[in-house]
Amino acid sequence: MGGVLTCFATEAACCFGKAACNCFCKLCGTRSSTATRVGYAFMFVLTAVLSWIMQSDWASRKLKSISHGYLELKCPQGDCYGYLAVIRICFATTLFHAIMSAIMYNVKSSRDFRSSIQNGYWAWKLLAWAGLVILNFFIPNEFFMFVGKYLDTPGAFVFILIQIVLLIDFAYTFSETLLEKWEEKQDKRWLGLLLAITFGAFLCSIALTGVMYAWFGSSACKLNQFFISFNLILCLIVTALSVAPPVQEANPKSGLAQAAMVTVYATYLVASAIVSEPNDNGENVCNPTNKSGKTETTTLVLGSLFTFLALAYSTTRAATKGDVLTTNGDDEASLPLISEQPSGRSSHLRSAVESGALPSRALHDDDDGDDSAFGVPDDDEKDGVQYNYSFFHIIFLLASMYLAMLLTGWDMVDKTDGVAVVGKSMGAAWVKVVSSWLVLLLYVWTLVAPVWLPDRFDQYGL
Image 1 (cartoon, rainbow, N blue to C red):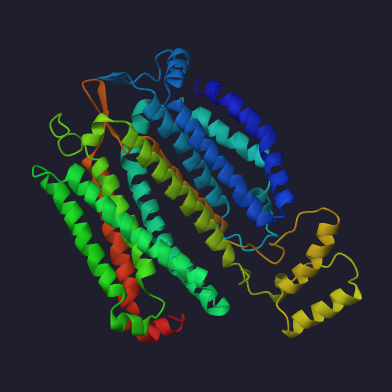
Image 2: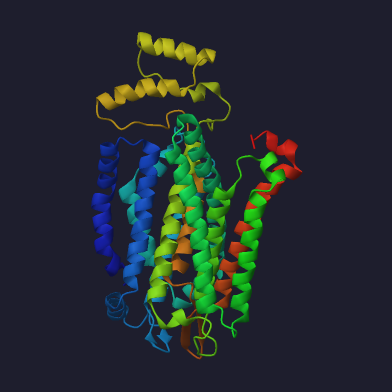
């Protein structure tokens, strides 16, 4: 049924997916944990592309002819196939990562046999994912109407919260990196870049606020006026608070750069929320974009961009925390196994590591030279996993839910008298508005917490 539409993509993925990832990683000299993240990112892109194709008229005609009416969903504008097809495919990816997260629970060493499942068996994992996709097309429509309304929406909200945390973390890290480079190299170009990004973000926020007032803030749209005005007030408060003397004294790392990045994202969320609003009694007074599909395309592109950036940053950020070995406290497990008599240089390195003079990764550097000489990709997980495998899949699980809502335009489906109505929902709009408030609230907490709790935050170097 639905599997006919996925068989060609699945066959190609199974044949070339693992080879492509391996070749890419060998050419770029990447390590195994990076190769794994590339592989799962490839699967996520495959989900997005296949879901997008399912919304086309060609896919709808194929589904109609293959399913013989089993997948038929009557809508006022005709048969609806694309909406639930997207929910089905994204739910298959959600289920796949849920299973993987359960399997990978509490994996603390790359010597665990489950680590090989995480980092290998790509053809089998792609086949398993394809099997879940096919299986979902045999499940009745009513189940996925429930999934789209009551599972994907809250899951997408949680992923937005994760995006918020990552955004604030990125704002601090990015600005601090540019400032450190400017101070170390005394190169004003780094400072100029930081100033350009800061003022550029503020200008984007101002411009977007003006557009929202002009297009969505007419006198008849009181709720939109409240959303826009309240967001503007909060952004002004946050900006002023970021340069307040007590905040600067407690946390010198805070400043306008972080405030600019946070405010532009919060303003984007409000704009996206207003675009997600349904028509008012069949009219488009408060949301004129309902007349045009260009705005939905823009929202889809921006949302997809934020999604992939959040996924890339979250997994990369997790990998950077791999310096602390996630072992069970056994010092012996922290060191690589010796398969042969070590050379004189390796023996000295091992002695230095055991005495504490050098970190254990010094042994990796020595081994990496041997590996690369024989063309074998470097392995950065010889001492232990570089990130939490289970949490890694939870991130992708939530991202799949967010992708489902993103590709369907945050539309909801309700079925009355045998007719399904797929349309925009105020619930989706409120999810985004509340998310914009939360991003500002969380950023405010990072500003005032060091002032209120200086002793607790001193240990983190704030």
